[in-house]
Length: 595
Image (cartoon, rainbow, N blue to C red; front, side, top):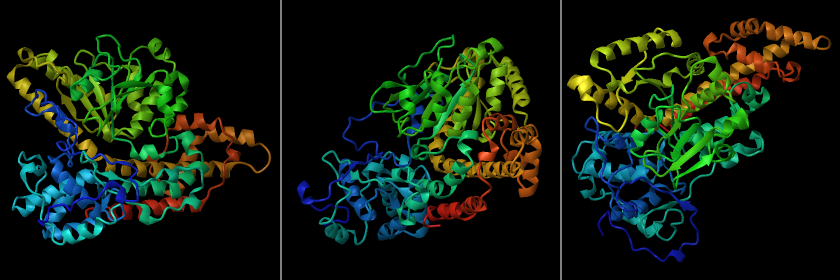
């Protein structure tokens, strides 16, 4: 029997262990669904839909898929649907490739740096191994080869014997008639149950990815500190399981008619449910555009209470906001990797601002903390930054690394005007952002219409195409960097929670034991800046990591400082140990196993 052949399958009832639910991989040509329509016309020589392709999106015939499904069952001995680094080193060794080649195979297959391979990534890795065995060089572009599906599965020495022994005990991965494997995925919902973290204590063996490790560390070490000092009321709601598992999000901000909805439509190459486009302020609500089984819109009150959605924290903004919030779902390959947040146009004028029935700036700040990229869209004819827009941009404090500026509809002005518009935009942003660094501005016309070459000329058209290529490349990196972003946000949250605990502990220490508590609290609130300075000096903390002073005063006024718990050094020490040892060890354990 050749190395890549599969033994004959037994009947379905010969396997006593039922499977739980299908694990849908991402091979693009091996599903039972009809082939996708031809790609739409391109701008700049590359299709916008290319952003939806991941490292696992490779050509894979049904026959090869069935073969890889059996191999996946061997490579995943614990049946959790994940081939970890330790599992991969044992299985991939049967290919006979050098360590350097296998290091490159893992780096490309695990492009999201999750620390494991799902079935789609595993299939991609096997095709890369097949390429290497045929004498081809393994590069990042290897999975884009048109002849990839013509390569036979790789030769894996000793695999036949393992397959023969496993057929009697296969109980987790099993292809259906359409070739889709079924995998029992690990459940981490119990980590977020109502039981105390001390009773849960998930063992390290249950952690099979970086995200799983962050969940465990949050429950066991960070969440107790947040609960003790009410960090969720002062800064951000407590995290849930869905917050860790959510897809990367991209939020679009800008004044009305700057092309936010059109930008999303341009990337999707289709309308999404509830989309309205016009010169007037058509988008009057926050719309989350995400993947779904069918096209529909879900009201805000409904989506905010769903446990599998990362929007539970929005309930704190009340029913007035939730009535202006909705979720637009549709099946789309791009939405399988990225979720878009379309926002109402930022208006100018004090009267228009006060007519909002909810905290617009607070909502944008909440989304900014959750998003991976924030796009600020400008129109060449609307460069003025209103008072509300200034407040919105100021609310993005701490998320400057996520901000991208897009000068949209740039083909509506000629080259000379475009130069002046660009200079005026940079001057305006410099005043608002108050930073010496120059922010990157992408220039283009992000819609389905051809570039107005009569206005911008051939040089301007070439410029737009290059700028669009750069922005597309930036967006393509979002799914790959999602895991790193989760770690980054987790560390930022841990530092903020620790500083919050220090502040509350300092204020509690200043309270009298018996009489005059009300006067003492008011004095502490009035002189809160001095208390911040004391904490900063005592614990040697950077001033830039402290919370916004006015917001902290406002929230603190609703609490009795005397009711807070005293400083608990053990809790803070647990967070310090997590930052100094646990997270570095976690990243090391789930890094490239061949490094």
